[in-house]
Amino acid sequence: MMTTAPTHEDAKEAARKLTAFLVDEGYRPSGLYSYEDAEGQPLFWRVRLDHPTEGKWIRPLSFNGNGWELKEPVFQDGKPLYRLPDIARNPTATVWLVEGEKCADALAKLGLVAATSGASTSANAADWRPLAGRNAILWPDNDEPGKRYMAEVSAKLLPLGCRVQVVDIARLNLLEGGDCVDWLATRNGAKAADVEGLPLVETQIELSDWPEQNVPAQWPSPPPEEAFHGLAGGIVRAIEPHTEADRVALLIQLLVTFGDVIGRTAHFHAGGKHFLNLFAVLIGATSKGRKGTSWSCVSRLFNSIDEPWARGCVHSGLSSGEGLIWAVRDPIEKTEPIRDKRKEVTGYQSVIVDPGIEDKRALIIEGEFASPLKVMRREGNTLSSIIRNAWDGLDLRAMTKNSPARATEPHISIIGHITADELRRHLDETEAGNGFANRFLWTCVRRAKCLPEGGSLHLENLSPVVERLREAVVFARTVGEMRRDEQARTMWHEVYPELSEGQPGLLGSVIARAEAQALRLSCLYALLDLSKIVRVEHLEAGLAIWEYCEASARFVFGDSMGDPVADEIKRALDANPSGMTRTEVSSLFGRNASTHRLGLAFESLLSAGLIRSSMERGEGRPTERFFSMRHGTN
Image 1 (tube, rainbow, N blue to C red):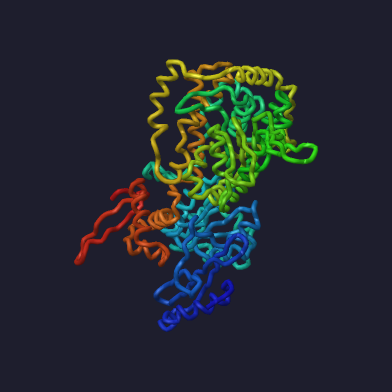
Image 2 (image 1 turned 90 degrees about the vertical axis):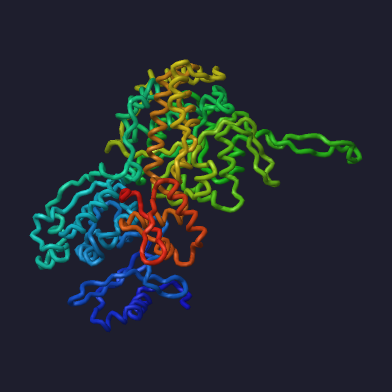
C-alpha cells in the first residue's frame, strides 16, 4: 500500500498496468494529464490513448487510498479545471478556455494561460469559480459538440462577472472537428501574439428556454431606486462620485451602522421585540470588490456624529462567543470573605472585580469573515450560538465555567467582508441550517468605477446630509415602539405570504428570516425620515433591499441543497441529459454512501423540484431513472 501522496510517475505506472489490454488491441498512449489544486497538488489524472482507426480512449485515473482505479474522485464543489495552478499564479491574465487537455497544453507552451474542464460534456460538472471576474476567451472545436460545450461554459462564466469572448472559428478555415492544435500545426513557429490576434466575438447566452428555477444564478441586478429612498439614498448619492465602492455597499453599511448608533431604543413588536440591529456580509466576486473602501466612507459620517460610539463601540474581529460578550459585558462581581482583625471570616460580600461596559452598543467589523466561519467548525466553540442570540437581542452568557462574563440588553451589529468563493467553501450545512446564516443580509458588491486619484471625499462638502443624519440619530433615540400605518399594513399583508414561504435547499435556509429582515429594514428607513410610523414608501424600500440580498444569496448558493450527497447527484444529473439509474448514481460514491443516505438525497431533490424520475420497463423488473429538471420534463 502506498504511504505517501502519489506522484506523476506513480500515476504513469498505474496507467500502464490498467490500460495494458488496450495496448494489446492496438491503442498507443498519447497523454497523461494531471489535474491539480491551485497549489499544484495532484488530485487525479486523465489517461488518453489513440488508435489508428478506432479513435481516442480517455478515462480518469485516481488513487483511492488502497489502490488505483479508472475513476474520477467526487468533488463537492465541482471538478477542478485543468492547469489550475497557472490560473492562480496569474491572477490578472486572460484565460484561454479550450476543449481538452492537449489543446490547453499547446497554448500554455506559447506562454498563454489556458485551461479546460475536459471533454465537451464536462462543463456543468466543473468548478468555474476560480475564474470569477476574469477575462476569458473561448476557443471551441469546429463542430456542434464543441460549440455546445462553449455555450455551456459561457453560461457558467457570465454570472461570475467574467468578460467572455469567443474565437470566431468560422474565419479560421479549419476542417470539421478542427481545434487549436490543428490550427497551430498549420502555422509553424506561431507565437502567443499570433493567437492573441485571432478574430473574436463577444458572447451573451440566451437562457429563455431554460426552466426558470434552473437558470444559472446571475450576479444580481442593481436594486431599484426605491431602495435609495429618503436620507439613505441622499447620502449614497452624495458619496458615490468620490469612491470606487458599490453604491449597494454604501447603502447596506449605512443602514447597519445607523441601526447600531441609535442603540436599543426603537423597536417593533412581531412575535417579540425586534430592535433594529442588523448583521450584513458584503460578498465580492473577487477580493477587488472595494468592500473596505465602502466602510471607510460610511464610518467617517458616524464618527463625526457620535464620537463616544466611534471610540468605544466599534470593534474588529470575531473569534469566540466569549470575546463578543466581553465587548458588552456587565460588571463582574466576585464573592469574597469579610475578615476581622484576627483574620477570621465573619461574613461574605460582593466585590466588583471588573466594572464592565456601560454602553451596550457594539458594531463588529470583520474584514475577513471567512475566519469566524472556520472558527465555528471547532468543537466547543460558542461563537455561532452567541451571534444568533445577539441578533435576537437576548442576554448573552457563555455556558462555560471559566467564563464569568455576561451581557444584559446588548445591542450588537455586524458587518463582514468575504468573497463568494470563500463563503461557499466555509459556510457549512450546520451553520446554514441552524439559523446562523439567515440572520445575515448577504449582499453582493463589486467595484463601481476606477478612480486613479482615489476620490476626494471631504466631510465639509457633505455637511447638509451629515446634519440630517445627526437629526435622525437624535430622533430615533426618543422612539419606543413603532407601528405601520393602514396603507403599509395592507401592503404587508399582501407581501407576507411570499416572504414567509419556505424554499428548499441551502438557499431556503439562508433566506428563511425574510419577513424579519424586511421588517427591520423598513423601520430604519422610517426613522431616517424622522417618523415612528412605517409608511408604504419605507416598506417598499425595505423590501427592495431585501430582494437584492435574496438575489445575492441565490447567486452564491444557487440550487445547492447544502447536502454534499444531494449536490453531487444534482451535478451528475445536470451533466447527463439522458439521466441515470440508482445503480449508476450509487457508483459515483463507491461504497461511501449507503442506500438509505442516497434515498434521503433523492427524496430531498425530488421534493425541491430539482430532479424528476420515471420508470423504464424492459424484459426484467422496471428500472427507475432520474433526470435533472435542467433538461426539461420530457
